[in-house]
Every structure is written in C-alpha cells, then in structure tokens.
Length: 174
Image (cartoon, rainbow, N blue to C red):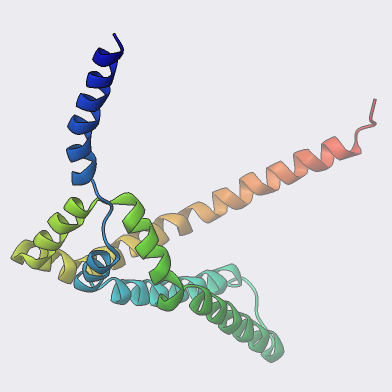
C-alpha cells in the first residue's frame, strides 16, 4: 500500500512539474520589453496631460456661475497648479514603472508575455499601439461629457442626502 502511495505521489509530481514549469512567471526583462514596445510611458504621459485638462475643466465648470475677483482667480490658478504638480509627482513614470513590472510579473506567465510581444511586433499590434491614444482620448471625452450631464443629478442627490441627515440629527434620541 505504501509503495502504491509513493508511486502515485511520484507520478503526480512528474505529471504536474512540466505544467508548472511551463507556467513560469514573466521575467522582468521580458516585461520591460513589453512595456517598451507598447509605448506605455508615452500612454501614461498622455493620460497625465488629459487628467490635467480634465481637472482644469472641472474646476472651471464648478465655478462657472460665480464671478471671481482677481485674487480669487489667482487662488484658483494656484490650486490647479498645486493639484497638477501633486498628480504629476505621484504618477510620474519613475514611480509607476516598478509597480507595472510587479503587476505584469504577478499576472502574466512568460508564455503569455511572449505571445503579447509577438502580437505587438506584428502590423496589427503596431496599429493598436499607434491608435490606442486616439481611442483613449475619444473615450475620455465621451466620459467627461457623460459625467458633466450627471453633475446636476449628483448635486441634487447629495443635497437630498444632506437634508435627510440634517433632519435625522434634529430628531430627539431615544
């Protein structure tokens, strides 16, 4: 009986070992190559520019009803610059690249990264790389337009919630 168990354990380890070996995590070098070939740094930089523009547009929209004094205008510009600086500092490529490397290595096997590298080297893959910024920009514009339509509803729901909370706070506690 013991020999049968030992033989079964040996068979399972030999059968599972090749499958496990084939599912090696991606190497750092291959992930770096993938990030390089997909122009990920450029995509992140473009996303930062778009985020900056969105923050400016949001602040402008939030203050659209108000006329600002010169001092208030100056404070608004300073605030925008501080926010943009914070975002740029925290989301700069040098901060993000190690996280991307770690995520890709934990998520993809070497075989999968090799497949992605093959795809992105192909004409179709190059087209995806070249056109993805346009897709992202158009997507962001659509999302921004949709969100701006929601702002009045969001404000109304928030105000209603605040009124309900205020009413509940005014009630005597048992």
